[in-house]
View 1 (tube, one colour):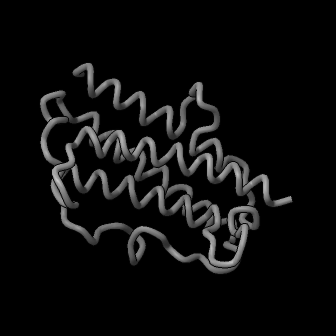
View 2 (view 1 turned 180 degrees about the vertical axis):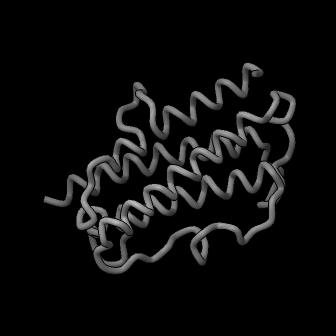
View 3 (view 1 turned 135 degrees about the vertical axis):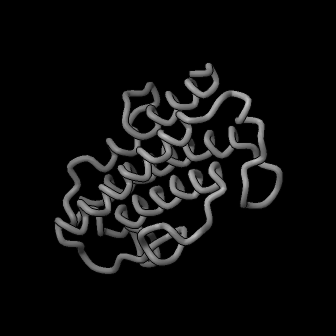
Length: 159
C-alpha cells in the first residue's frame, strides 16, 4: 500500500473507530446510547443524534460515490444529507441505523484502500469545483470528528 493512502486510512480509522489523541471518535460517541437518547433534540428544529449518525453515513456514501464516479441514488434511505427521524426509534431501528453507518464506513475504507498515491491528486468526480480525491477523504474524516464532538455536547445536554 502506498504511504499517503495508508496515512489517509489511519486518519479515517481514528476519526471513526480507533483510539486517537483528540478524544472520542464518532463510533465511540454513539456507543451505548439508547433509542430515546439517540432521538432527543437539544431544541426544536435541531438534529437528534440519530439524524447526525445517518448524516455521517450519507457523507461516507457520498465520498465513495465521488471517488468511484458511481451514480447518485443508491443510498438505502430516500433523500440526501439529513434524514428526518421524528419520534423515538425502536431498538431495532436504532441498531439498523448504526449498522448502516458501519457499512458505509467499511465501504469507504475498502474504496480508499484500493487507491494508489497517484490517484489522490485526481479531481473527485461529482460535486462542484476542482476538489481532489485526497481532499474529500480528509474532509470526511474531519466530518466524523466534528459530529463526534457535536454528539458529545448533545449527550451532555440530555440529563
